Amino acid sequence: MLTDVQLRRLAPREKPYKLADTGGLFILVQKNGSRLWRMKYRFGGREKLLAFGAYPEVTLAAARDARDQARAELRAGRDPSLTRRQRQAQARRTDRQLQHVGEMWIQTQSARWTPRHSEDVRTSLQRLIWPHLGHIDLDDITAPMVLEAIRKIEAGRAKETARRIRQRLSAIFLFGIAHGLGSHDPAAVIKGALAPLKKGRQPALIDLDALRQLFQDVEAIPAHPVTLLAMRFLALTAVRPGEVHAMAWHEVSADRTTWVIPAERMKMRREHVVPLSRQARDILDAVFTLTGRGPLVFPNARWAHRPMSENALGYLLQRAGYAGRQVPHGFRASFSSIMNEHYPQDRAVIDLMLAHSNQNRVEAAYNRALHMERRQELAQIWADLLMSDAADAVTLLQHRKR
Image 1: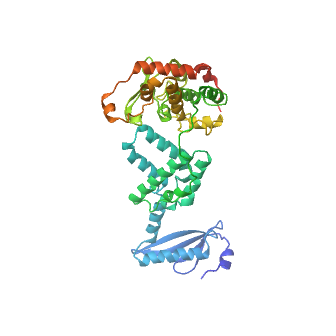
Image 2: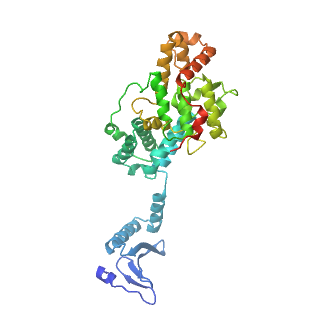
Image 3: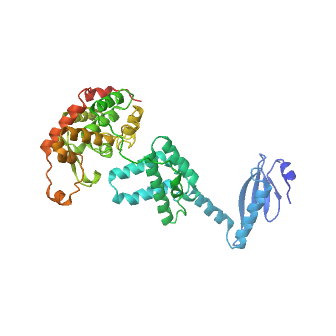
């Protein structure tokens, strides 16, 4: 039997040579001095050889353990070299990795999602989760690992996004369990460990002077021109932020007086016609010089074929000092509050402009008037009020980028 002292003293010779241990295990000493573990065995009437690595990286004890495992395979009637190749192939498989299972889940769910939502889900996971956990097998991911990834998102002042990501991860783990690719859901375990989320109305300014000051503050800091133009357009149209993020050029009429949001992108699954003020049309003219060759009006800053990040406008408001005072969705409340105060007789038309659902089902079934002429007038009045002190949209094209 070999000893560690003997192994350490082995010196190279003119030709490779072997020294035997027991049970078919031996050390092969090469001319360059390397010492390699080998095991000779017979299977199916043929002599075969197994390699266990080099000494001292693989110790004598480890080599003997590998030999004993191989002999156990032989006693069970299995060829240890074949078993080893199968294990190596299993280790190289990616079908149990989080990103692979996540992409399968997205593909399955996309049939019932809108294209915009599918893209939002895919982009959020690609950006926030795959770089950290995507290459790890489902069953190797622990609750603390998921919590660490989610808390990084929370630290970026995106608590709502952190919760959505946790829910998506939980759905992926459950999908993996159902398909035999995993056995537990660590994302469900951490739910109670997340920072509390304050619920209530979205922060929104309802004073016209304060809103005008907001745009002066936002447009005074370095930012991408497309993001700044999208912020103005969102406020002028009073639509939901996601509808601006995914806005496509083909949805705008030839004369740019209306924007038709398709039903599949609307919360209420109904087509919505948005009258565009002169200032909104100026924004489209300006941004066309930057994005007109692509499909999207306000695309992602990195990928022109993808919608703007769902956090881009929110981060811009935060950097301008409006955290807790105004969020992108809050422009709807700003529009509703100010316009209803000025034109209380137009409450129903204002609700139409906001694409609010009619709570009276009978009235909703019979009253389908669009009131487009008055909506166009109100859109222009709102734009004149909001942008009375603002510079022309085209000036934002020369804005300093971050």
